[in-house]
Amino acid sequence: FVTARHLDEYYSAATRVAAEVQNNLNSDFIRDALNCSANYHCLRTFVETFGQKIFRRPLEGQEVEDYLAFFTALQPADQNEGFFNHSDRFKEAIGVGLPALLMSPHFIYRKELGKANGDVYQLDDYEMATLIAYTFTGSTPDDELLAAARNQQVRTKQQYKAQAERLLATEKGKNQMARFAIEWWDAGTELIGAKNNNIYAGYSPEVSEAMVLEMEAFFKHVTFDSTGKFQELYTADY
Image (cartoon, rainbow, N blue to C red):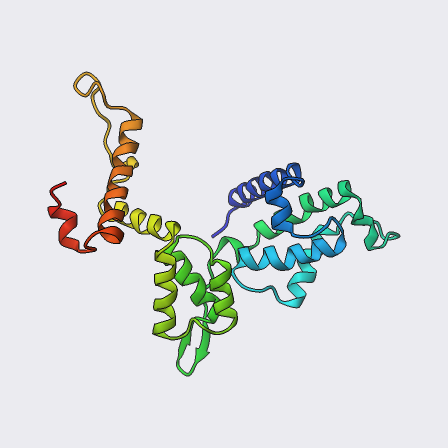
């Protein structure tokens, strides 16, 4: 349930992100993300490519047109597409259009509606790719996983296992498993109680954070570099 307060906060966050992009359009990071020159066709390409990344699926034809309309809302009726060839106008278009993508429920919520298959519903390829990505990295599918979904290569147990193993070999995957362990152990910094500084003079928020980082590092070592066995987590003598 989304209240007016939620909507205001979503809009505030989206406009802050858009402003950051606007202020850094000439940075290497933003140029690589846009991967095109400042013009109308770049706006369309951005809607299609960035939209696919944050919606975790390709946009349908009408969706592209609907979101592109936000980017081109400032274009006067008597001007053609060349209106956006000017860098300042392109910058303004990003500021108007990007919040629309970032406030979309397709970005904010993960869809797992599936498709009917007889009496049951099965996740579609992109929903399955999203499930795999968030399970093993805590984030959106990468390009390789999206490509596998596009090619219908996330349907079998073998394909699922291959993607899981690939993601768990990345630093992002290892960190996700470490976060799982911290939650499992109820050991996050927010769960470490306050200490009496008269008794624990050396204790500080920095020490608390270091304790959690140590547990994360220990879990990753046991899981990915050592035996990988549950027993070692509780009996390690180091």
